[in-house]
Length: 113
Length: 112
Image (cartoon, rainbow over all chains, first blue to last red):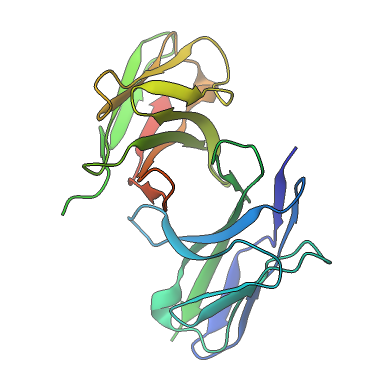
């Protein structure tokens, strides 16, 4: 079946530091890949997505590249801000899965001023 | 415009009781999803509606769990004979037919 393995947290960084959160996946064929973010007290929000190999999703300074050869979709940001503090979830929709998302376990990011 | 609304936001119940959790999707969204998120875990799929019908209920853990969407809008997740292991945050999401999922803030269920 489909699965997502995500870098465990929590991760604590200083403002303006470089961020990487690792994500690898197992799926049949070519899934669509997503990063969701959950800010304190809010619902999950789509951060970015990529639907085919070598696609790069980007939003709010965050980027992730769909790497088929390494089955990875690592999240990066060059300079984090305090407002980026949240829980980040990597997820996929596999082929024939009726659009159900399979999530990783989440990574708590805290950015200190 | 309103987002996905879930009620109650918090529910505390005793083992063995019956619970209903409600989801109001974004107006016009045809698809509706229920997920369950346990502490320290990512959300796990429960059931997906397209219109009034359950297109995929493969994630429901057992027959104590049931969900309905009688008019293709509001959905209710029903849990019978609750157990302590049912304690979790229950998330609802809606989407246009092939579009992005929009999540509610969830209903936190605690079974004592």
